Amino acid sequence: MMEWIIEVLGWLGTFLIIWAYYLISSNKLDSANRTYQLLNLIGAIALGVNVFYKQAWSAFTLEIIWGAIAILALMRNRK
Image (cartoon, rainbow, N blue to C red; front, side, top):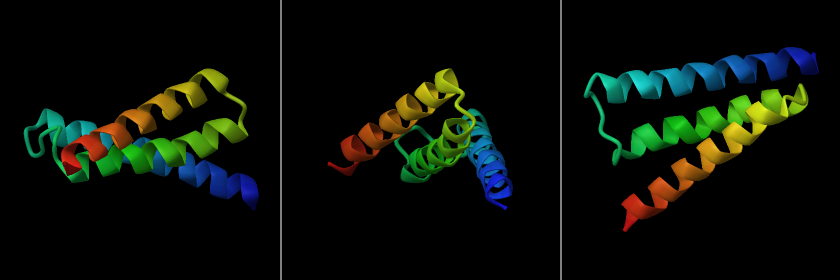
């Protein structure tokens, strides 16, 4: 059961990151938009859980950095 949940989180994270990329690439959002950054953050966390569980350390590092960038952007745009 746990593996199924981890797999769903991975796919959810992938979908959210791709959706965020689509929205910014099609000019529906800009990079300062809170929704864009939240999609990236939640996507990075969900996908990060998946790759951590699978011990894919290079992908896990990517998700840590991806999430940190989203957090920094959210904090910067909050001011």
